Image (tube, rainbow, N blue to C red):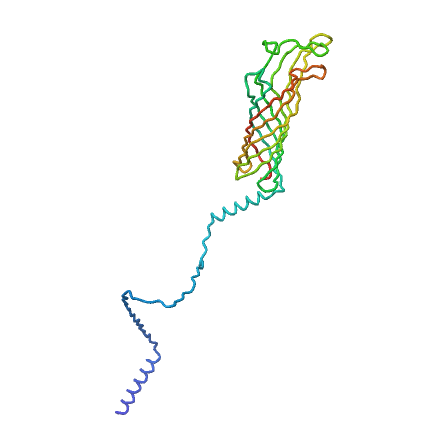
Length: 298
């Protein structure tokens, strides 16, 4: 009886131990961190120290990083483009110009109290770099129209030119009209030097102008025909001035011109007659203001 109880007790313990081994257990792991803080106090105290033949290596400065200056880079690009544009010496520049001017003729002082004529001009020009990118040679051709500063009309007023004139073969001529309005044609060769946006220049010019006077001339021995007596003359002179570039293709110009007229006379091929025939030399001076536009080359 006792043996059965002991056997039954061992059987229960064995079964319980077997189920305990098959059951999953959750283990809890605790991690501990040990933090140690050390505080150190340094006491600075000046001491005497004697240097004996100490050698220090040379300091080398190295740029560890690069900061881009975008504005400076763009300015350098624009300067480079301008230099390249100016160095294109094989490219011709051409353009047009229009403007206003004042003209003073010495030979009209005897018949006019007003000294300056007002006029308009228009021209075309062609320029090319020479020697360097800043030196230019310019050829300019154009025309100008000068308004009259006086009007002599024998049919309305008693002028200093009223009356009869006679040719060398004694044919009568009766003065009718005269004023100094006229067209002028000119050709210029200029040398320009560009400094920043300013271009001073000097050059030579050739101009041709025509003045005309009207007479009543005989036809079939009767004074009944109106005819013109003209002064066609080609003159040589010089020009000085300056241009200012205020936009990439636009220029403002101020120019002074001067040339001389020799032996001023008004002639007609039909009649052997000269009026105002003189051996004197008269100067004509002009001041022109203009605006130019470069069609190409800029």
